[in-house]
Image 1 (cartoon, one colour):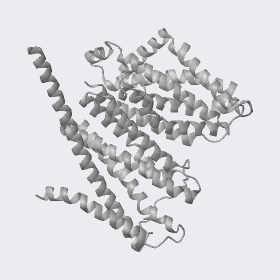
Image 2 (cartoon, chains in turn brown, orange; image 1 turned 60 degrees about the horizontal axis):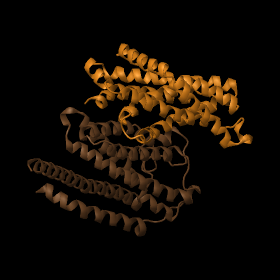
Image 3 (cartoon, chains in turn orange, yellow; image 1 turned 180 degrees about the vertical axis):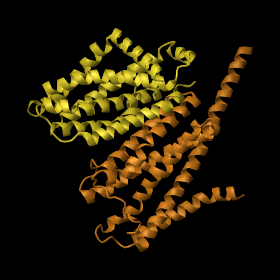
Image 4 (tube, one colour; image 1 turned 120 degrees about the vertical axis):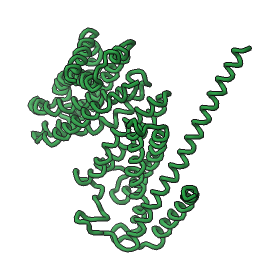
Length: 240
Length: 219
C-alpha cells in the first residue's frame, strides 16, 4: 500500500518540486551581488551535477558491485546498474551544457581545459563507453559482469572530480556552500532554493530510473516472447 | 602468482620475438606517426616545439592500442583460453604476466620513439633522459590498464572500435601526467610530482587487475 502510494506520488511530487525550484530560482531569489542574474543557473547546474556524479553514477557502480558479489548477483542488480548509468549519461551531458552556458559569460569561453571540467568530460566518455560495452555483448551474464567491472573502474574518477578543485589550480570554484570549517556561506532564500533543487533533481533521477527500469523489463519480456515464438515456429516446421 | 606471471610474460614475449610484429609493423607505425606529427607542425614549429612531449605520448598511446589488441588476440586464439582454464592458472598471475609483457614491449618502443623525438622534434637529449623514470612508470600503468581494458573489450573477439572507446578515457589522465612530467624534464623542473601520481595510477590498475581479471575471464 505504502509502496504503491509512493510510486504513484513520485512523479507528481517531483514535478511540484521542480516547479517550485523554477519559481524560487527565477522570481523569488534576488540577483547575486557579483554575478547578477547569472546566479540563477546555479540553482540547476550543481543539482544536475550532484545527480550525475554521485546519485546516478553511484547507484550504477554499487549495483554493478552487488552483481559481481555472488550472494547478491541477480538480473535486478544488472538492470538497475544499466538504467542508472543511462540516466547518469543524460545528466552528465546536461552538467557539461549548463556549466558551459554559465562559463561563457563568466570566463569568456564555452570550454576551458580546467581539471574539474576535463575530469567530468572524461567521466562522460566513460559512461558512453559503458553504453557501447553493453551493446557489444549478447551473452547476458558476460555483459553484466564486464559492465560491472567497467563501472567500478570508472568510479575511480568520481573522487578525482570531487577533489580536483583542491588538488589543482582550477577556474572552477571550490566548495562554495560550506567553508572548510563547516560554516554556511550562502544565505536565506538562495540556500533554501539550492537545497530544494538538489532534492527535486534527486527525485527526478529516481522517477526516471523507475521508468527506464520498467521499459527494460518490458524489452526483455518482448525479446523472450519473440524468441519463444521463433522456437515454436521452428518446431512446427520440423513436424511438417 | 609471480611464477605464473613470469611464465605468461615469457610466452607472450617469445611469440612477439618469433612473429616480429613489434619490429616490422608496430615500430615503423610509431616512427611514421612521429614523422607525421612533425609534418603537421610544419618546419618552423617542429624543432624545439613545446608540443613534443604531448606528441610523443600521443603516438605511444596509438602504438599501445595496437599492442593491447594484439596481446588480447594471442590470448583469444583457439585453445589458449581452454588451456588456461584446464591448467587452473591463477587469473591474477595471467593478468600480471600479460601486463608485464605489454610493458616490456612498450618500453622498447619508447626507447626508439624517444630517440625519434630527439631526432625529429629536437627535444634536448639531457631532458629526454631525465624524463625516463616517468616514462617507465606511465607506460607500466598504460600496460596494466590496457590489459584490463583489453579483457573488457572481449579479448580481441569484440568489435574493433570497442577497445579505443573503453580505454581512451582511462588513458587520458596518464597522457596528461606523461606530458606534464616530460615537459618538466625538458624545462629542467621536477618530474617527481607527476611521477608519484603515475605511480599511484600504476598501483591502482595493478590492484584492480589482480582483483577483477578473474571475473572477466570466468565463463
